[in-house]
Picture 1 (cartoon, rainbow, N blue to C red):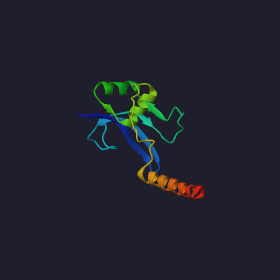
Picture 2 (picture 1 turned 60 degrees about the horizontal axis):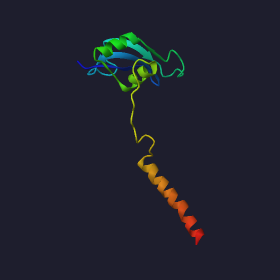
Picture 3 (picture 1 turned 30 degrees about the horizontal axis):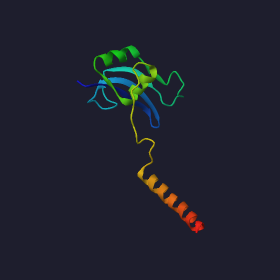
Length: 120
């Protein structure tokens, strides 16, 4: 059985509240889970203690049993100091998209055209 430690969404529309749960990876996101391991409230300020609450010992036990945390939960565990930080490589993150590149090229061409005419 492939185990995951992931977020299960709760709360009403536009007011999310998440539970950190250990579940079988084949179950739906908000479906059946084996154990609730903590909570995450994204509406609270980032420096608030109540934003992320986790039962660290139980999470470590699940990881020892082979459960894999999702990306978001892994980041929370890194922030809490439970796991070591992973180096992430996203070389295209700061690169503008296709349309933005085209706009920049057109703007550069427009700005270069009047400069060429005044130089003559």
